[in-house]
Length: 573
Ligand SMILES: Nc1ncnc2c1ncn2[C@@H]1O[C@H](COP(=O)(O)OP(=O)(O)OP(=O)(O)O)[C@@H](O)[C@H]1O
Image (cartoon, rainbow, N blue to C red; front, side):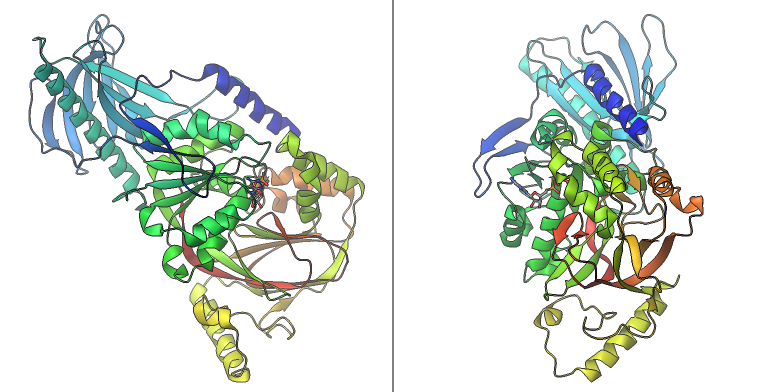
């Protein structure tokens, strides 16, 4: 684990050394506004967006019509942006931008995959009448010393000079032609992304675009710097207008989202740890119009120390594991492409009557202790979990309590009809009981009140002495912990792991190492159990203790939870 993390950080260091060219003078504008109650807000107004031009021919760029996938098919001659001496033939198809050098030593065409394209734009030169075409690609490339490829920025710039006469009209004609190419590249790459199942959140963008919420305290306090170094540029390249909101305190994001005019926003994106998204999700669910509000797509960019959802989003792209800034670039690219999927929410009831909505995990025992106790090592960022794990291993303890769950069959419909049965029985038994939250909200069909025994269809775990209990709703528990490899955003399943007492320290360490690659269940350890569930109940008896929901500490005591399939929307690849 330490070795791989070390490699991850070598990558980060190299990233900053080998970063590619910066953006040239931009025709986009960045404004700074004051938006209450955020401390600082900057609005990036992206270039105007238009539909694609009708196909037409011109002297330089020739539209040959629509490709088989419905995208524009174009040919054109451009020169290199720096000297204008090297001529390139560009061909745009449904799936790629082919670039072929035709002066000096002609080259074979280089095909740039439009699935890797974040955006494209055109602008007028400052000191000449040429127009420039830029396309921003983020292909997977191997880096020195790295065992797997990572997304790396590859900016392509070309100069277009159609007309020899030196007047303003010709400059505008050049610009129009370059813009036509930029729109066609954007259109074809959006079509490529749309071929996958899913919905583009960026379809029909609204006035304010995307709200990017940054917690300046998350992780080792680097989130604002990550916005400045990567995300602002990526969103500008992708032509996504956005507003930066820097949170001032705990629950700031929750309050803001609870009261926001959501008709103004296309998506709420969190550049932070999972804790800030937990606030946002619960802020959406607090609203009287929660049913509509929770349909607002949410996105995650890793800026915390755990970054479990960000690691899961990357995992769902089926690319090799990445860390640190490589993970940020991967998630940033996913955001630029704008595909959304449904996201399960897990309704969690605490003994005090508080109800929370979780998208990630519930933890008790070893994992929860490490998460909260390692807060004191926050300054060392993600390494805090390694230090916390070693400290807790040294003082390994067990936790007494009861665990029960409703097993998930492969057939969700069966589970749902069973749930309906439970709910009907419960309604007839307790018709006089009034729970106001359930009249307005998602109904937890599977749960009976915490002071009653679990329904007969539930499995009660015989063991009562645990080392840990973790319920996973996504694949990763942290950037390094692939705990539930088969989990998916909207599988409607609680992936329940528990470890019973009696496990030795070396075996535990071996399991944690295997968790890095998601192979811990292959170790055949009899103390580690995995079950798929639709609902669970946990009644801790050891006191004091720690329970976390999505990495946030909640009140300690009995709790129960039920999965609700696909009620929210997540920006995923
Ligand atoms: N400006 C702020 N100052 C202090 N706390 C904040 C601020 N903004 C948000 N918070 C709170 O900080 C807590 C932790 O945030 P978050 O999870 O995003 O970061 P993290 O703990 O570093 O990341 P991770 O969960 O990945 O370890 C959340 O409970 C959130 O409410």
